[in-house]
Image 1 (cartoon, one colour):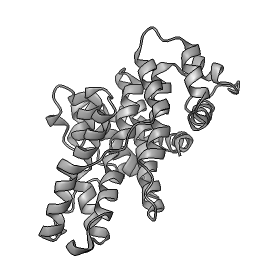
Image 2 (image 1 turned 60 degrees about the vertical axis):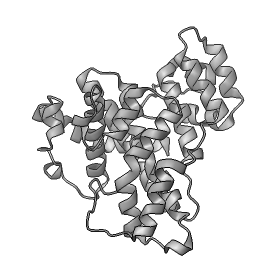
Image 3 (image 1 turned 90 degrees about the vertical axis):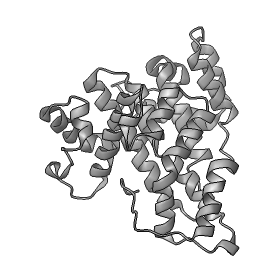
Image 4 (image 1 turned 90 degrees about the horizontal axis):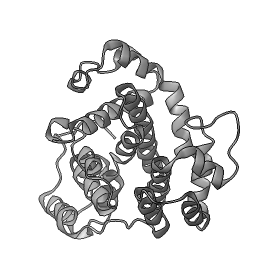
Length: 284
């Protein structure tokens, strides 16, 4: 989960060719589960009523559990606990419910690689924290907080897909060691992640932000979405390093100036560290 690519890692030519062929032309992307797809479609329909949404959620226990867990988390909870789907739907709103359906689906369909549970857990934790940081950045910029959360949540969704593909490398091509697999994920995750976002019919700005979150200047016309995602990514990496101090955050990264954030704004985001780590636990 390094934020930069280690260009010193070598992968044998036959293994690299096989991997790139799989990722570019023969990759079978996970399918969005039917219930989640229905929730996403309903949330995109201006004429949807709450009862239709509740009806779909009720038929999927995992989605229901996810909705109620997050509704009662520190991100959304008030003094009154939410104990029913009806209450959750009215409290959270369509955009949040759409994100929760996607969250549950990602956990089941993408973030599951047998034998690599610790690595997958770390990647998912980073994604959840990035999503919550992205919400707070968008709040400061007075932008759509749930759109920012979505971009942050899915920005590294390509990593487990690349990992799954690398683990299927035929024995005739050799075996990739840990550093080589990490290099493959670093190199290909953004492009592969954007393909999944498109396959799940999520908004174009989300796909572009995912593909270019390491180089937001290439994300036209969605540079701002990509910049918010990149800054949230950097903040999440910083927040997850034990003992890291505010003065260790790379405040000179160009994305900070590009978003017109003042030093006080960045300081305020850094001060949210513990709160955001706690809030992100609801998605794990």
